[in-house]
Image 1 (cartoon, helix red, strand yellow):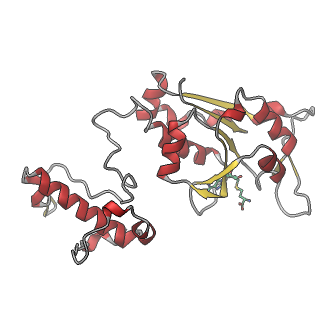
Image 2 (image 1 turned 180 degrees about the vertical axis):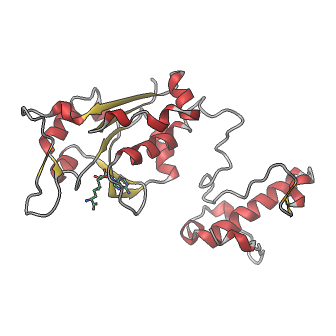
Image 3 (image 1 turned 135 degrees about the vertical axis):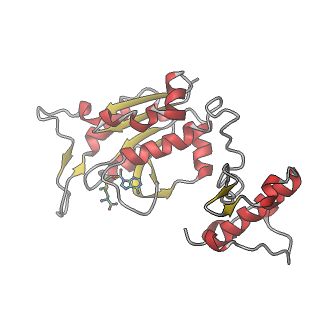
Length: 248
Ligand code: SAM
């Protein structure tokens, strides 16, 4: 069965948006994955098609109604058999391993919040998994959903060719990726590191691993502390972090 994402949103016209171009867009056009953006408003029952109301207990803004959203979820075929996510700054931060799990499944149903958020009762009643894409607040869940879908789609079989491989990428072995270089051989007086031009694959691999480790240790102590055992350097072996690796 083809992997597909079903997005529940107040702004279905935002899709496919950036998912319709480049790698994801080509794969979408050739049927390697599917995308369905559904308007939550279609599940409203009153003549004003209202989807939100004022927060119980007072306060600013509006909250998406549980009954309308539940009806929108229930109208999706086989919704119960798919991961049901809601994009939320309160959610568990999205990781590459969760992305890989989602890419390996049938494809998620994703609820996009707006306004102040969503009535808690629909999150509980429909078992929605809250997913965050970072510690900042967007105005709606659509861009967050696109980020999640894009990360999944590139892992689907047949989407990435030989030219784009995910094996060495950041997070694939619990490390950030090593620095990349291409022509020209010297740019504004900065040469490509000599080892990369040596043709010695063993040396290149060792250099890349060392760089990946140094970068991860300098920039992401959380990843460094949690790295898988096989990537832990032999005791006493030191790697120098190039100065410009810690400033970004
Ligand atoms: N009042 C909410 C709070 O403080 O947690 C923020 C609501 S935000 C303005 C509206 C919607 O944007 C959220 O319901 C969610 O769907 C989405 N959103 C905002 N930031 C997000 C993030 N970092 N990750 C995932 N979704 C996010």
